[in-house]
Amino acid sequence: MISHDTQIRVLYRDTDKMGVVYHANYIVFYEAARNEMFRSIGLPYTLLEKQGIVMPIVEVESKYKAPAYYDELLTIRATIKELPVVRAIVEYEVFNEAGQLLNTGKTVLGYVNTERMRPCRAPQEFVDELQKYFE
Image (cartoon, rainbow, N blue to C red; front, side, top):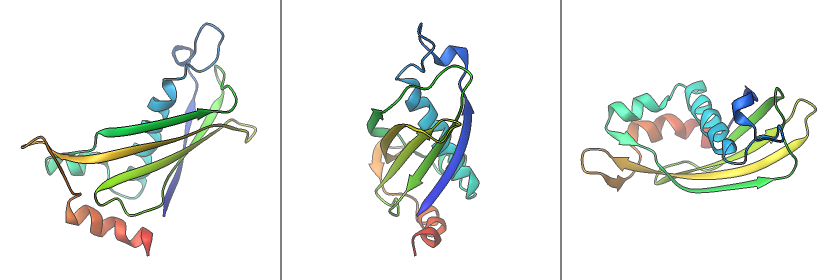
């Protein structure tokens, strides 16, 4: 299992007229947390991109439990529970500074070969690097 916490300060641009984080921005927070999680284990997306592989989101879920507000420091926990060979399922939890769970989410990402623009499996070197987290 891989899990990583990323902190994000809510900016004014992230909120709606009520000062509450606009619902679609959670997807942006998920992306930031997912990128930082992969970077933290030495596998930034740029490594896949150099091999002609991209990881588009094919499914997204987001459940809102309590609002987040302007200037709050949020912690977004990104977790992968199974080795992402054919697809990567990333789960998220968003907490405020008091530790209150505000949101949960999930993204499912596929792998696409940019040369053929067709789905593919994760490159073997990528899978081999990730394997140690799932033993």
